[in-house]
Each structure stands twice: as C-alpha cells, then as structure tokens.
Length: 107
Image 1 (cartoon, rainbow, N blue to C red):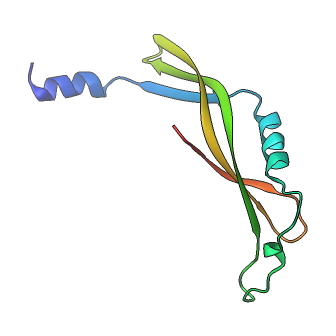
Image 2: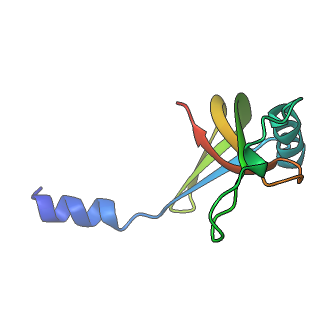
C-alpha cells in the first residue's frame, strides 16, 4: 500500500473528542474562594496610567476529574475518566471579588 492510499484511508475518518468536567459550577466557586486572599496587598489600588487598570492576581493548583470521550466514525466510542492537576489564575480589580480568569493543565 502506498502513502497516498494510506493517507486517504486515515484522513477520511471522523474523530470527535469531548472533554467534560465533573461539577463545573461548584468547581468555579471553590477556586474563587480558595484564590481569595485574606489580606489585600494593595496592587489593585496602585496608581497606574489612565488607560491601564491595576489588579491583584492569585493562583492556585487544584485537581479536576471528568470524562474524555472519543467518537470514531460514529461507530466506536471510548470513554476515559481522568483526574489531573490544573493551575487556576484569578484576578481582582479594585474592591471586586476575585474572578476566575484562566486555567492550564499541568499534565
């Protein structure tokens, strides 16, 4: 079998990937609570140029669990549970509460 034939066989297959997180609404609240500092070091109130906005940041590491699903040509489905570490970064502007800004997998 030549490369082009092999490529056509492989490339014409549909693969759909879905990742879900267990209890996402609870997760966001927990992370924002954990990220909130018990003291304010003042960065959110610092003087900055007029077009800038001062903010505080807080990051934490937390474990997530969920399910990854692979659907192959709508004929095969593989479900794999996962538990992995993530880094979450929250930001706070002035007197507002911390808000979840971004996250990244550490695996």
